[in-house]
Length: 216
Figure 1 (cartoon, rainbow, N blue to C red):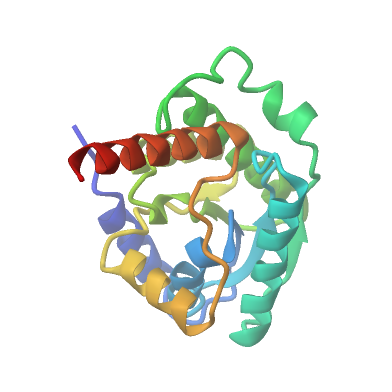
Figure 2 (tube, rainbow, N blue to C red):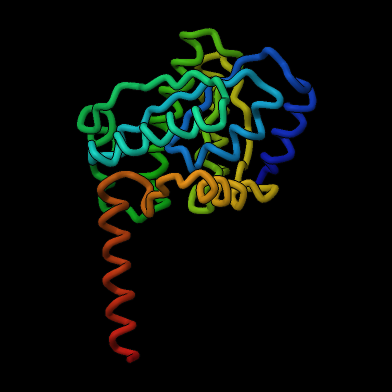
């Protein structure tokens, strides 16, 4: 049975209250995915951002997304600290998903990728003394919010740091993220990050072009 993680999040935020001093370390994959979430959660929690994304296998793409995170943070005057995790795609990502390279987007490879990044976030949150950790990943309609929350709950038990549950795409936050990205002219990528998702996207584009050519 699916759990309503949006409702669980709101109950927790109501318990925390507005303008709390409680600290949240939230994993961000990019500025467009994080923008609406940060805008909403900052009214409740003292937030810092953990940018740990070894799944972005192309260095230029990684730097572009990291820079956009800083640009948006400055533009909104959030005053949040952005902590950059180690960038080692080979050691951290490629090794973890070995044997799952050909899995489709949203499958077992992605599950391992979620867990890799969320584990690092929870570990860093414990190390630095945050009361909560979370991730922005569930903002995407392409991401499995049930998996993300199940992983978070497991890591809460492992590290002893409370996981802020949520399904961030709900309450029109995904639409808000799109609008904020346009408003601030943020770079909005068209694939998740890893080379495998990029190749899958390119293959779909080729198939679409072929279909369009056949119907003309």
